[in-house]
Image 1 (tube, one colour):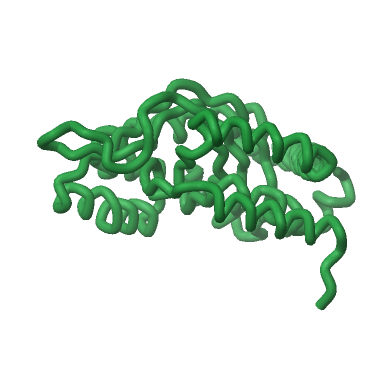
Image 2 (cartoon, helix red, strand yellow; image 1 turned 45 degrees about the vertical axis):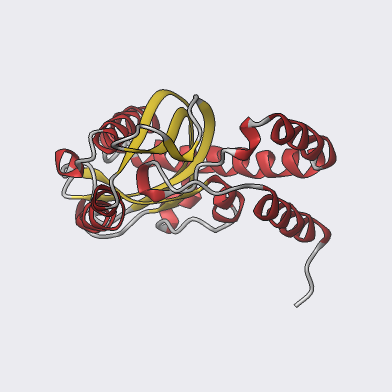
Amino acid sequence: MKLSKKEWLVVLTLIIICFTIDPVYAGPGGTVAKAFFRTWWGKLILILLTVIFLPLIIYMRLIEYRKAREIKKILSQLSKEHKTFHWLQLQKEFHNIIRRVYQAWQEEDLSQVKQYVNHWYWQNQQEVYLDRWKKENLQNISRLKDITKVRPLYLEISEEPNFENSRIAIAITVVAEDYLIDRETQKVVEGKKGYDELDYVWFLEYSEGQWLLDDIQEGSMALEIAKMPNEVPEYLVAKA
């Protein structure tokens, strides 16, 4: 299978990132918060990468923008039947979920957000990350300062009654700090103190009239997800 020039650029970018960033396992979902770009050398490399890959960055943003506009049109049509699917309402709900999940991670207790996440996410993240860190005498510091972007990337509308089990993927950018400290010494063992802009893709599913967090992936997945065709009933596509 031959790759196009744009696809080769994406692959090259990912390779460069993988070999120049030190991963830090912290934050909601156990996702990787990058600390390298906060250093002097990291900032210099980031500037150089931005200049070199500016056409690719513009291409990626254009794809995401067009996809977001397409999804918002579909949601606008859908909201005529189901008002809770209007994008402004969804955006409000998603902001609330993001803030609550970050607060739960900071307090190391995801049971307080059971009504905002599905069972798989709650059980997996609590046991795999938070409980394990406690056993290793580590504390997760996960402070959210601001949410600067929430943009739809992918939409899957179910034809079940009340659109049950519909799914949406959103690109989010937050200003937050994620790192791990030793509980006894209070020294940072993973990551770096200080707020930074972090990009993620959050997946949510619609269950019993409420949106629930299902999974979190890194922001580097945004383009791949945005290029996926939406799965929605034909009558919504035609009207949009």
